[in-house]
Image (cartoon, rainbow, N blue to C red):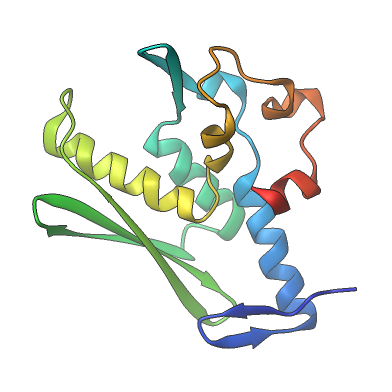
Length: 154
């Protein structure tokens, strides 16, 4: 049974609801482990991906003409609004970041873009690693342990 999904105040039913669920699952899929970088922070390890990986994922799942990003500065922070076209509707999600120590303003723009991508599910699974140094097997697409059920919960 296909569940109805509410987007932007409108209810998507049937095929449109299925399309939204499929897009969401595809965006949430884990990246090849070679794309995931780790950096130590105290007793933890923070895992992250490159902004280009987010771009490539969006291109692969929705197509290069069906997403767009824009930026604004709010109280010294860069806010990225990431829009995805689903059907005939543009849906926006936004997040922000400050400048980074390594690349300054450019790093802040990249971080804001990646964080907005997480709102769409891209790389969101990396937040569930609890600071572990090694990626668990379910986070490795080659293991075959990633499932639609996992994607629906993350």
